[in-house]
Length: 117
Image 1 (cartoon, rainbow, N blue to C red):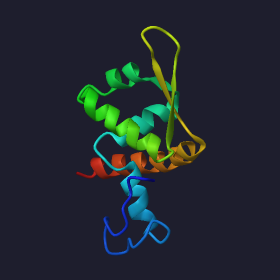
Image 2 (cartoon, rainbow, N blue to C red):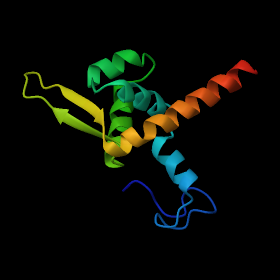
Image 3 (cartoon, rainbow, N blue to C red):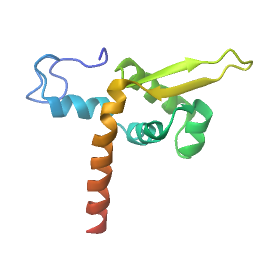
Image 4 (cartoon, rainbow, N blue to C red):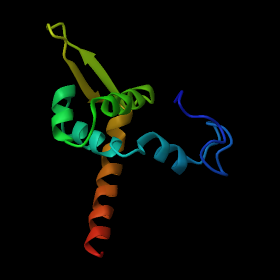
């Protein structure tokens, strides 16, 4: 969680050890594309280009940044192939796997919310 700075994310966030768990979780999985990336990877490991094809509106730069953030936070891992050109496979860590049911619950809530609008 090296990108997390104390007292950066609200009044109850004093230190990482004593951070508000909800704020910390939202910091880690928040962002325009992280939810979609995690949803895709919860189905199966994917190569970088496959992820990019599944998210038409994302730029290469932003996808790379989002993947790096998730990797830095220990949610995903990457594995480079020895092919030429090199391919990079992304997959959820055990910590990332623990997020899968939470993301499903968020998706369920989002669908219910959208149906009421």
